[in-house]
Picture (cartoon, rainbow, N blue to C red):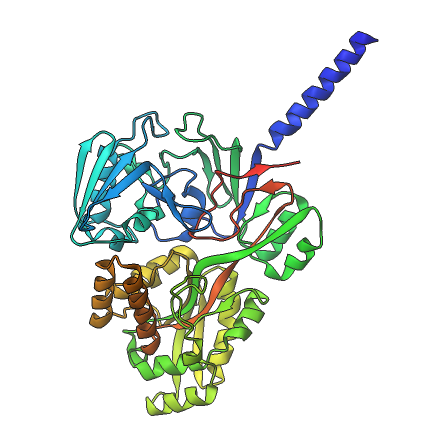
Length: 490
């Protein structure tokens, strides 16, 4: 009897251990598949959603609350004139292939990002760098052309992660980083699998492995969550079903904010859209709340410029482009555009596809016809973002505090205003918080005055997860599914 009891206890123990081991795995749902896995060579948010803080790391990083904390750099100092940053690296950091990560890799990564031939989607983050020097294997010094109080913030972006020259060529398909997880397999069109990096230099994650499952259809996403095929969907594409999950104790609904300014982007250099009156007319034809209710089921905050409402420097300029269809018609008449027809390219996200249909109807009500084309992300990136072959498109810009993109003359909506470029140049050289705040407010006002784009809403972060999962980000200070603090609880 005693032996039998021991055997029974051992069996229970083995079952319990197996159960606990199973809870070290997680399946994360994603609406979009990344086009590649190199955040330094692609603009798609889905890249960072897989690799940021999981596979790749930078000198600094975003914490869940949006603050900037140490990453590969354990500390840094800035000179009195604000032009020289000295970063001290963590000791004992290795890449996934076992090679050491040191100051030479930092120099290589920053020099590559700022090089003339760089394909980095956020190359502007690095243009202020004049020189990168290796002081010793664990110390790197970055000299800037002018003071930049936002430099640690810039180094936290996914576009600023550190890669090794030996493996950078394969980063798009076989990324080798320093993060707590490493790539196991990418089954195109289906999933990406990662596993815990047992040689990680920092605190080991609770998860042993994770699978990112690509499910673009909202109905399929709902079914996958209900069936348990997916454990969490941090950016759930079917907000109309959130109430059902909220009422079910097996799940929890997590609603937070993002850095995603969702806009009706206009090609400022395309025919009639070069006229500010036409752009203004379009903005007054937009009923933001109707789009938020119809496409996002009430989730989203109206915006009147390219700035997040949760940012302390936000200016509410929604009234300046308030819904006023009669004013819209008047402006079109003044511009001589009473029979206007424009192309509207809609990428895959539901906010774009659903919102685009509503917006097309709103434009039709003021006399603007649209030719809608639904495009996949690869086509959108090639045709719209790179080729600038479009009139209108709907997209959410999820990069943090990125109003500086309006200073880029080659950016896809082609604003190219010298006064705005000068304003951003002054902002970059300013370190005083109050002065920076004033400049940021002026920047918001300028692009609103020029009706560069139709500013729609701040994208909400609506997520669904198994109730036993803890550590998923509530808010999204950057475009990431950071799994470093995620774990299962009983």
